[in-house]
Image (cartoon, rainbow, N blue to C red; front, side, top):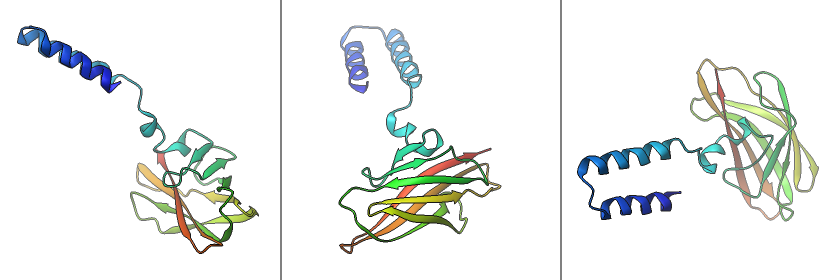
Length: 157
């Protein structure tokens, strides 16, 4: 997309246009760019808000699958799939506020296989109009490596 826009801008400046036509053309290009859909990165920033299956932001090989969409003060069941070479020795889950301190809300996790977890969380209500939460899962692998995986999501009024 941006390569195409740069070529258009270069063509505009290379032609002998008067400054009013050039300014109008550049402004039109920016309006067209602003009307394009969001990039995949922007759409996936809060993947759990619009998808039931998402990769972790900091561990692209870890996937969470929700049983239902996220709603306030209702149990949300999920499954987490880790890579096959991750043998989980210990694990812990919590829900934390990303843009406001909300303490650490425990998340129930049960190991369903050597590299999969099942869990349940409840998102509590907050007075902040645009609360951003993070589901954090910390795992200790049998090789001694410790990893913290995050899935942020927004709860808007």
